Length: 84
Image (cartoon, rainbow, N blue to C red; front, side):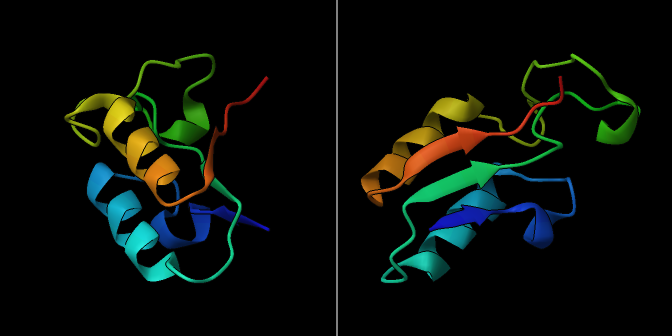
């Protein structure tokens, strides 16, 4: 089963929101955790940013490494959304 965080962040995920989600998902048998739109630098909003795949330092001050490590610690496979 997959958890896609878009419905909890509406395209504005943060390190804090991902960590909060992970806490609430414990024991729910989720295999995949997907960080959806808005993880990248979105000065114009993710809806208007295309191929701007540099993570947003304000939303993820420690980079994506911290949340990826936490996702793995929770026995989930991390995934990330991007448009093509």
